[in-house]
Length: 435
Image (cartoon, rainbow, N blue to C red):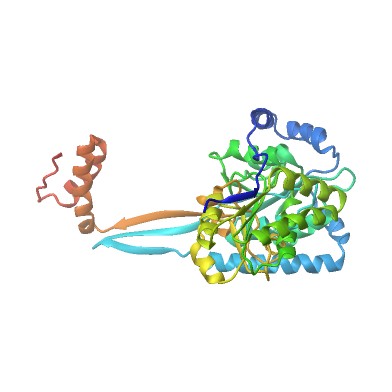
Protein backbone atom coordinates (compact mmCIF):
# COMPACT_ATOMS: atom_id res chain seq x y z
CA UNK A 1 0.00 0.00 0.00
CA UNK A 2 1.30 3.47 -0.85
CA UNK A 3 1.59 5.99 1.94
CA UNK A 4 -1.61 7.96 2.36
CA UNK A 5 -1.13 11.60 3.31
CA UNK A 6 -4.17 12.69 5.30
CA UNK A 7 -2.40 16.02 5.70
CA UNK A 8 0.39 17.31 3.44
CA UNK A 9 2.75 20.20 4.20
CA UNK A 10 1.97 23.35 2.24
CA UNK A 11 5.45 24.83 2.79
CA UNK A 12 9.01 23.62 3.29
CA UNK A 13 11.20 25.35 5.88
CA UNK A 14 13.99 27.39 4.32
CA UNK A 15 16.97 28.54 6.37
CA UNK A 16 19.40 29.77 3.73
CA UNK A 17 17.64 32.64 1.98
CA UNK A 18 20.14 34.70 -0.05
CA UNK A 19 19.24 37.93 1.72
CA UNK A 20 20.00 36.36 5.10
CA UNK A 21 23.36 35.10 3.87
CA UNK A 22 24.35 38.47 2.44
CA UNK A 23 23.28 40.36 5.55
CA UNK A 24 25.14 38.03 7.90
CA UNK A 25 28.27 38.00 5.76
CA UNK A 26 28.39 41.81 5.80
CA UNK A 27 27.92 42.01 9.58
CA UNK A 28 30.63 39.44 10.24
CA UNK A 29 33.10 41.19 7.96
CA UNK A 30 32.44 44.59 9.52
CA UNK A 31 32.79 43.28 13.08
CA UNK A 32 35.98 41.38 12.24
CA UNK A 33 37.44 44.61 10.85
CA UNK A 34 35.95 47.01 13.41
CA UNK A 35 36.32 44.96 16.58
CA UNK A 36 34.63 45.91 19.85
CA UNK A 37 33.32 49.26 18.60
CA UNK A 38 31.55 47.76 15.58
CA UNK A 39 30.09 44.94 17.67
CA UNK A 40 28.71 47.49 20.14
CA UNK A 41 27.28 49.47 17.23
CA UNK A 42 25.34 46.43 16.03
CA UNK A 43 24.32 45.59 19.59
CA UNK A 44 22.84 49.06 20.00
CA UNK A 45 20.97 48.62 16.71
CA UNK A 46 19.61 45.10 17.19
CA UNK A 47 19.71 44.42 20.95
CA UNK A 48 18.87 48.03 21.90
CA UNK A 49 20.77 47.48 25.12
CA UNK A 50 23.16 50.04 26.55
CA UNK A 51 24.30 48.09 29.59
CA UNK A 52 27.59 46.32 30.20
CA UNK A 53 28.01 43.60 27.54
CA UNK A 54 30.55 41.50 29.45
CA UNK A 55 28.88 40.84 32.77
CA UNK A 56 30.87 41.50 35.92
CA UNK A 57 30.70 39.19 38.94
CA UNK A 58 28.61 41.77 40.78
CA UNK A 59 26.13 41.85 37.88
CA UNK A 60 26.02 38.07 37.80
CA UNK A 61 25.38 37.94 41.55
CA UNK A 62 22.63 40.55 41.26
CA UNK A 63 20.90 38.61 38.49
CA UNK A 64 21.15 35.35 40.43
CA UNK A 65 19.52 37.01 43.44
CA UNK A 66 16.41 37.61 41.31
CA UNK A 67 15.88 33.91 40.56
CA UNK A 68 13.33 32.18 42.83
CA UNK A 69 14.71 29.34 44.93
CA UNK A 70 12.29 26.79 43.46
CA UNK A 71 13.46 27.63 39.93
CA UNK A 72 17.08 27.41 41.08
CA UNK A 73 16.39 23.93 42.41
CA UNK A 74 14.83 22.87 39.09
CA UNK A 75 17.82 24.26 37.16
CA UNK A 76 20.24 22.42 39.46
CA UNK A 77 18.25 19.21 38.95
CA UNK A 78 18.43 19.52 35.17
CA UNK A 79 22.11 20.47 35.32
CA UNK A 80 22.94 17.42 37.43
CA UNK A 81 21.19 15.15 34.93
CA UNK A 82 22.93 16.68 31.92
CA UNK A 83 26.30 16.53 33.69
CA UNK A 84 25.75 12.91 34.70
CA UNK A 85 24.97 11.88 31.12
CA UNK A 86 27.86 13.93 29.71
CA UNK A 87 30.27 12.29 32.14
CA UNK A 88 29.03 8.86 31.01
CA UNK A 89 29.61 9.92 27.39
CA UNK A 90 33.12 11.15 28.13
CA UNK A 91 33.95 7.84 29.79
CA UNK A 92 33.51 6.17 26.38
CA UNK A 93 36.39 8.24 24.99
CA UNK A 94 39.67 6.73 26.09
CA UNK A 95 43.25 7.28 25.02
CA UNK A 96 44.48 4.16 23.25
CA UNK A 97 47.67 2.82 21.73
CA UNK A 98 48.44 -0.32 19.77
CA UNK A 99 51.50 -1.97 18.22
CA UNK A 100 50.82 -1.88 14.48
CA UNK A 101 53.81 -4.06 13.58
CA UNK A 102 56.66 -5.04 15.91
CA UNK A 103 58.41 -1.85 16.97
CA UNK A 104 55.79 0.60 15.61
CA UNK A 105 53.25 1.99 18.05
CA UNK A 106 50.33 4.25 17.10
CA UNK A 107 47.84 5.86 19.42
CA UNK A 108 45.05 8.36 19.82
CA UNK A 109 44.33 11.06 22.37
CA UNK A 110 41.12 12.95 23.05
CA UNK A 111 41.92 16.61 23.71
CA UNK A 112 39.26 19.23 24.50
CA UNK A 113 39.22 22.45 22.51
CA UNK A 114 40.55 25.42 24.44
CA UNK A 115 37.63 27.87 24.25
CA UNK A 116 33.93 27.21 23.59
CA UNK A 117 31.32 29.79 22.66
CA UNK A 118 27.80 28.80 23.77
CA UNK A 119 24.91 30.74 22.26
CA UNK A 120 21.72 30.79 24.35
CA UNK A 121 18.61 32.10 22.53
CA UNK A 122 16.59 34.81 24.22
CA UNK A 123 14.05 36.03 21.69
CA UNK A 124 10.48 34.72 21.99
CA UNK A 125 11.51 32.51 24.88
CA UNK A 126 14.39 32.62 27.36
CA UNK A 127 16.05 29.26 26.77
CA UNK A 128 17.27 28.34 30.24
CA UNK A 129 17.71 24.74 29.13
CA UNK A 130 20.02 25.73 26.25
CA UNK A 131 22.43 27.27 28.74
CA UNK A 132 22.39 24.03 30.69
CA UNK A 133 22.87 21.83 27.62
CA UNK A 134 25.71 23.77 26.02
CA UNK A 135 27.74 24.99 28.98
CA UNK A 136 27.56 21.75 30.98
CA UNK A 137 28.83 19.58 28.12
CA UNK A 138 31.69 22.01 27.43
CA UNK A 139 32.63 21.96 31.11
CA UNK A 140 32.60 18.15 31.32
CA UNK A 141 34.69 17.97 28.14
CA UNK A 142 37.35 20.07 29.83
CA UNK A 143 37.33 23.30 27.80
CA UNK A 144 39.54 25.83 29.57
CA UNK A 145 37.31 28.84 28.87
CA UNK A 146 33.55 28.75 28.27
CA UNK A 147 31.63 31.79 27.07
CA UNK A 148 27.85 31.94 27.42
CA UNK A 149 26.28 34.50 25.11
CA UNK A 150 22.62 35.50 25.24
CA UNK A 151 20.55 38.42 23.91
CA UNK A 152 19.78 41.01 26.59
CA UNK A 153 16.32 42.35 27.19
CA UNK A 154 15.94 46.12 27.02
CA UNK A 155 15.62 46.84 30.74
CA UNK A 156 17.07 43.82 32.51
CA UNK A 157 19.91 42.47 30.38
CA UNK A 158 20.28 38.70 30.09
CA UNK A 159 17.38 36.84 31.69
CA UNK A 160 18.35 36.17 35.34
CA UNK A 161 17.49 32.46 35.10
CA UNK A 162 19.78 32.12 32.06
CA UNK A 163 22.56 33.87 33.99
CA UNK A 164 22.08 31.51 36.92
CA UNK A 165 22.06 28.42 34.69
CA UNK A 166 25.18 29.51 32.78
CA UNK A 167 26.95 30.34 36.03
CA UNK A 168 26.30 27.10 37.92
CA UNK A 169 27.00 25.02 34.81
CA UNK A 170 30.50 26.47 34.53
CA UNK A 171 30.54 29.49 32.23
CA UNK A 172 33.70 31.54 32.70
CA UNK A 173 32.24 34.61 30.95
CA UNK A 174 28.67 35.75 30.25
CA UNK A 175 28.17 38.04 27.29
CA UNK A 176 25.02 40.15 27.05
CA UNK A 177 24.79 40.27 23.27
CA UNK A 178 22.58 38.57 20.75
CA UNK A 179 22.43 37.61 17.10
CA UNK A 180 25.28 37.77 14.64
CA UNK A 181 27.14 40.32 16.76
CA UNK A 182 27.18 37.91 19.71
CA UNK A 183 28.45 35.04 17.56
CA UNK A 184 31.11 37.32 16.06
CA UNK A 185 32.22 38.56 19.48
CA UNK A 186 32.86 35.00 20.63
CA UNK A 187 34.62 33.96 17.44
CA UNK A 188 36.86 37.02 17.10
CA UNK A 189 37.78 37.26 20.78
CA UNK A 190 36.24 40.68 21.41
CA UNK A 191 35.93 42.41 24.80
CA UNK A 192 39.02 40.65 26.11
CA UNK A 193 37.61 37.17 25.58
CA UNK A 194 39.64 34.31 24.07
CA UNK A 195 38.79 33.43 20.48
CA UNK A 196 36.29 30.57 20.53
CA UNK A 197 37.47 27.38 18.84
CA UNK A 198 33.92 26.04 18.59
CA UNK A 199 30.51 27.72 18.47
CA UNK A 200 27.49 25.78 19.72
CA UNK A 201 23.85 26.29 20.55
CA UNK A 202 20.55 26.98 18.79
CA UNK A 203 19.51 30.35 17.41
CA UNK A 204 17.43 32.09 14.77
CA UNK A 205 18.19 32.02 11.04
CA UNK A 206 20.78 34.79 11.39
CA UNK A 207 22.67 32.95 14.13
CA UNK A 208 22.48 29.71 12.13
CA UNK A 209 23.80 31.48 9.02
CA UNK A 210 26.65 33.09 10.98
CA UNK A 211 27.74 29.66 12.17
CA UNK A 212 27.46 28.30 8.63
CA UNK A 213 29.69 31.07 7.24
CA UNK A 214 32.26 30.75 10.03
CA UNK A 215 32.41 26.95 9.84
CA UNK A 216 35.84 25.87 8.71
CA UNK A 217 37.75 28.61 10.45
CA UNK A 218 35.98 27.54 13.62
CA UNK A 219 34.18 24.37 14.66
CA UNK A 220 30.40 24.31 15.13
CA UNK A 221 27.98 21.80 16.55
CA UNK A 222 25.87 21.70 13.37
CA UNK A 223 24.07 23.87 10.84
CA UNK A 224 20.58 24.01 12.25
CA UNK A 225 17.24 24.91 10.79
CA UNK A 226 13.81 25.08 12.43
CA UNK A 227 13.18 22.40 15.02
CA UNK A 228 11.18 19.36 13.85
CA UNK A 229 9.51 16.36 15.45
CA UNK A 230 7.96 13.10 14.28
CA UNK A 231 5.67 10.76 16.21
CA UNK A 232 5.31 7.09 15.31
CA UNK A 233 2.07 5.73 16.75
CA UNK A 234 0.08 2.53 16.38
CA UNK A 235 -3.40 1.59 17.55
CA UNK A 236 -2.20 1.26 21.15
CA UNK A 237 -1.36 4.97 21.36
CA UNK A 238 -3.48 7.51 23.21
CA UNK A 239 -4.69 10.10 20.65
CA UNK A 240 -4.74 12.89 23.25
CA UNK A 241 -1.13 12.23 24.27
CA UNK A 242 -0.02 12.05 20.63
CA UNK A 243 -1.83 15.29 19.76
CA UNK A 244 -0.44 17.06 22.82
CA UNK A 245 3.11 16.03 21.94
CA UNK A 246 2.73 17.32 18.39
CA UNK A 247 1.38 20.66 19.58
CA UNK A 248 4.11 20.99 22.22
CA UNK A 249 6.74 20.96 19.49
CA UNK A 250 4.79 23.06 16.99
CA UNK A 251 4.86 25.97 19.46
CA UNK A 252 8.62 26.38 18.83
CA UNK A 253 7.92 28.52 15.78
CA UNK A 254 5.71 29.15 12.77
CA UNK A 255 7.99 27.02 10.55
CA UNK A 256 8.60 24.08 12.91
CA UNK A 257 7.41 20.91 11.15
CA UNK A 258 5.64 18.16 13.10
CA UNK A 259 4.73 14.83 11.55
CA UNK A 260 2.53 11.92 12.58
CA UNK A 261 3.22 8.54 11.00
CA UNK A 262 0.83 5.71 11.86
CA UNK A 263 -0.70 2.49 10.58
CA UNK A 264 -4.06 3.28 12.20
CA UNK A 265 -6.31 5.59 10.18
CA UNK A 266 -8.78 6.03 13.03
CA UNK A 267 -5.98 7.20 15.34
CA UNK A 268 -4.77 9.66 12.69
CA UNK A 269 -8.22 11.14 12.23
CA UNK A 270 -8.77 11.50 15.96
CA UNK A 271 -5.42 13.24 16.42
CA UNK A 272 -6.19 15.61 13.54
CA UNK A 273 -9.47 16.53 15.25
CA UNK A 274 -7.79 17.12 18.62
CA UNK A 275 -4.83 19.24 17.50
CA UNK A 276 -6.79 22.42 16.60
CA UNK A 277 -8.58 22.27 19.96
CA UNK A 278 -5.29 21.98 21.84
CA UNK A 279 -3.73 24.81 19.84
CA UNK A 280 -6.71 27.06 20.54
CA UNK A 281 -6.14 26.57 24.27
CA UNK A 282 -2.54 27.84 24.20
CA UNK A 283 -1.47 31.36 25.26
CA UNK A 284 -1.47 33.93 22.45
CA UNK A 285 2.12 33.74 21.11
CA UNK A 286 2.34 29.99 21.52
CA UNK A 287 -1.02 29.60 19.78
CA UNK A 288 0.09 31.75 16.85
CA UNK A 289 3.27 29.72 16.35
CA UNK A 290 1.62 26.33 16.72
CA UNK A 291 -1.30 27.21 14.45
CA UNK A 292 0.99 28.34 11.63
CA UNK A 293 3.28 25.34 12.01
CA UNK A 294 0.34 22.91 11.98
CA UNK A 295 -1.36 24.63 9.07
CA UNK A 296 1.65 25.03 6.78
CA UNK A 297 4.27 22.44 7.74
CA UNK A 298 2.60 19.50 9.49
CA UNK A 299 1.94 16.14 7.86
CA UNK A 300 -0.15 13.09 8.84
CA UNK A 301 0.80 9.89 7.03
CA UNK A 302 -0.93 6.51 7.15
CA UNK A 303 1.30 3.51 6.34
CA UNK A 304 0.48 -0.14 5.77
CA UNK A 305 2.51 -1.59 8.65
CA UNK A 306 5.24 -0.81 11.16
CA UNK A 307 8.06 -1.59 8.73
CA UNK A 308 6.76 1.04 6.33
CA UNK A 309 6.34 3.42 9.26
CA UNK A 310 9.98 2.92 10.23
CA UNK A 311 11.15 3.38 6.65
CA UNK A 312 9.16 6.59 6.37
CA UNK A 313 10.65 7.89 9.61
CA UNK A 314 14.19 7.11 8.49
CA UNK A 315 13.58 9.03 5.26
CA UNK A 316 12.46 12.10 7.21
CA UNK A 317 15.41 11.72 9.66
CA UNK A 318 13.68 13.85 12.30
CA UNK A 319 15.39 15.88 14.98
CA UNK A 320 13.07 14.44 17.62
CA UNK A 321 11.50 11.00 17.18
CA UNK A 322 8.82 9.68 19.51
CA UNK A 323 7.53 6.09 19.44
CA UNK A 324 4.15 5.43 21.03
CA UNK A 325 3.65 1.86 19.90
CA UNK A 326 3.92 -1.72 21.06
CA UNK A 327 7.20 -3.68 21.11
CA UNK A 328 9.54 -0.76 21.84
CA UNK A 329 12.65 -2.93 21.55
CA UNK A 330 11.79 -3.65 17.91
CA UNK A 331 11.64 0.07 17.19
CA UNK A 332 14.90 0.73 19.04
CA UNK A 333 16.66 -1.91 16.96
CA UNK A 334 15.04 -0.91 13.65
CA UNK A 335 15.19 2.90 13.58
CA UNK A 336 18.43 4.45 12.35
CA UNK A 337 17.94 8.16 11.55
CA UNK A 338 17.01 10.55 14.34
CA UNK A 339 18.58 13.18 16.57
CA UNK A 340 17.10 11.85 19.80
CA UNK A 341 14.65 8.97 20.34
CA UNK A 342 11.85 8.90 22.90
CA UNK A 343 10.49 5.42 23.48
CA UNK A 344 7.03 5.00 24.96
CA UNK A 345 4.33 7.28 26.30
CA UNK A 346 6.16 7.61 29.62
CA UNK A 347 8.73 9.96 28.07
CA UNK A 348 8.35 12.92 25.75
CA UNK A 349 10.45 15.36 23.75
CA UNK A 350 9.72 18.02 26.37
CA UNK A 351 11.57 15.90 28.94
CA UNK A 352 14.63 15.76 26.70
CA UNK A 353 14.33 19.45 25.91
CA UNK A 354 14.55 20.40 29.57
CA UNK A 355 15.69 17.90 32.14
CA UNK A 356 16.32 14.24 31.24
CA UNK A 357 20.05 14.67 30.66
CA UNK A 358 20.36 13.91 26.96
CA UNK A 359 21.13 17.01 24.91
CA UNK A 360 18.48 19.08 23.13
CA UNK A 361 20.85 20.66 20.59
CA UNK A 362 20.08 18.24 17.76
CA UNK A 363 20.33 17.90 13.96
CA UNK A 364 17.39 19.35 12.01
CA UNK A 365 16.22 19.39 8.39
CA UNK A 366 17.15 15.75 7.77
CA UNK A 367 20.72 16.11 9.05
CA UNK A 368 20.08 13.21 11.44
CA UNK A 369 20.72 10.95 8.46
CA UNK A 370 24.45 11.63 8.88
CA UNK A 371 25.11 13.19 12.29
CA UNK A 372 24.02 13.19 15.89
CA UNK A 373 23.46 16.09 18.24
CA UNK A 374 25.59 18.09 20.63
CA UNK A 375 27.49 15.98 23.12
CA UNK A 376 30.68 16.08 25.11
CA UNK A 377 32.35 14.52 22.05
CA UNK A 378 31.76 17.67 19.95
CA UNK A 379 34.23 19.58 22.10
CA UNK A 380 36.92 16.91 21.82
CA UNK A 381 39.59 16.57 19.18
CA UNK A 382 40.59 12.98 18.42
CA UNK A 383 44.27 13.23 17.52
CA UNK A 384 46.76 10.50 16.69
CA UNK A 385 50.43 9.93 17.45
CA UNK A 386 53.10 7.38 16.63
CA UNK A 387 56.60 6.29 17.53
CA UNK A 388 58.89 3.50 16.33
CA UNK A 389 62.14 1.69 16.97
CA UNK A 390 64.68 1.76 14.18
CA UNK A 391 64.15 -1.90 13.40
CA UNK A 392 60.39 -1.45 13.51
CA UNK A 393 60.55 1.43 11.06
CA UNK A 394 62.29 -0.64 8.36
CA UNK A 395 59.19 -2.27 6.73
CA UNK A 396 57.29 1.02 7.07
CA UNK A 397 60.10 2.90 5.30
CA UNK A 398 60.34 0.35 2.49
CA UNK A 399 56.58 0.44 1.81
CA UNK A 400 56.52 4.24 2.07
CA UNK A 401 59.39 4.71 -0.40
CA UNK A 402 57.94 2.40 -3.03
CA UNK A 403 54.33 3.66 -2.74
CA UNK A 404 55.54 7.27 -2.89
CA UNK A 405 57.52 6.65 -6.09
CA UNK A 406 54.55 4.99 -7.77
CA UNK A 407 52.57 8.10 -6.86
CA UNK A 408 55.30 10.34 -8.22
CA UNK A 409 56.06 11.88 -4.80
CA UNK A 410 59.85 11.63 -4.76
CA UNK A 411 60.26 13.92 -1.75
CA UNK A 412 58.15 11.59 0.35
CA UNK A 413 60.21 8.63 -0.83
CA UNK A 414 63.47 10.30 0.11
CA UNK A 415 62.21 10.96 3.67
CA UNK A 416 62.07 7.17 3.98
CA UNK A 417 65.35 6.61 2.07
CA UNK A 418 67.38 8.82 4.40
CA UNK A 419 66.31 6.84 7.45
CA UNK A 420 67.05 3.50 5.84
CA UNK A 421 70.50 4.75 4.88
CA UNK A 422 71.18 6.10 8.37
CA UNK A 423 69.83 3.19 10.41
CA UNK A 424 70.94 0.31 8.13
CA UNK A 425 74.10 1.51 6.34
CA UNK A 426 75.30 -2.00 5.54
CA UNK A 427 72.08 -3.18 3.93
CA UNK A 428 70.82 -2.76 0.39
CA UNK A 429 67.14 -2.21 -0.36
CA UNK A 430 65.03 -2.29 -3.49
CA UNK A 431 63.38 1.13 -3.42
CA UNK A 432 62.37 1.33 -7.07
CA UNK A 433 58.86 2.23 -8.10
CA UNK A 434 56.81 -0.43 -9.86
CA UNK A 435 53.42 -0.09 -11.40
